Length: 77
Image (cartoon, rainbow, N blue to C red):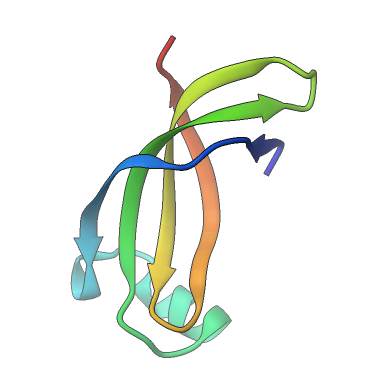
């Protein structure tokens, strides 16, 4: 992750869950068995250069495990 999330992630929605996640086997092997969901949302991020941008973020999330592998998908401004 080459950025820091500097405010709350908003407009959070589930885009896949359970067997609909392509990387489900890898997630279970890496982080453990749970009810995995692929999520997306919008937040302001600070890049390593110091610039602040609004971006769409994607991540995997599971109850008791938390958010994993947060990725910036695109800038929105």
